[in-house]
Length: 261
Image (tube, rainbow, N blue to C red):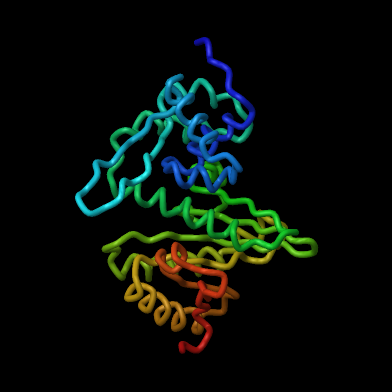
């Protein structure tokens, strides 16, 4: 297959979509932080015209503003990405199923992009953030099972911080949160992380809950079981809305070992 050429900047777009699966126009603008927003729109249109990406539009509902277009990889993009470094064919082949993804799956993907953008906005100038998703963690067999929604590495001048992040959707039953906490405690106890990372500190665990009720449930359950364990596991909780609407002064994460206000 003859592949049409892309600019160096355009090449980032298929890679972003491989990583996050679904991204909307506004999120692309923030990921590129380009001084000319129309330029990003032009890149997206060109990629769509060349058959590498697909766009989805939501019909306008009376009384609401138009929602931004959502993009995902077209099957042709497989030929574009398959030989690139860091691309796992098992994960890349998922693009054949993208057009049949549910609204729940798409919303989950978009929320994960918002979380990444939030973390980028909060980082210090000297820090570098690496944000791995389930897709880019394919092949990391020593990670917790199932894989977290994201593995985050924040490299500072003198210190590296690591996090496992789980994003929970609306209507997640309480037992799912409890089981996930227990899975992380078991994973820490088994020592697989220490063996495979030369005893790097165990990543802090971040739970992003759909609402305050779920957050409180995780807070109290996590506080109880972690206090009874012998593992040095740190769990922090928040809600997706806290992240989306946070300003510079917002305290976003709550450590379950803290005394609740």
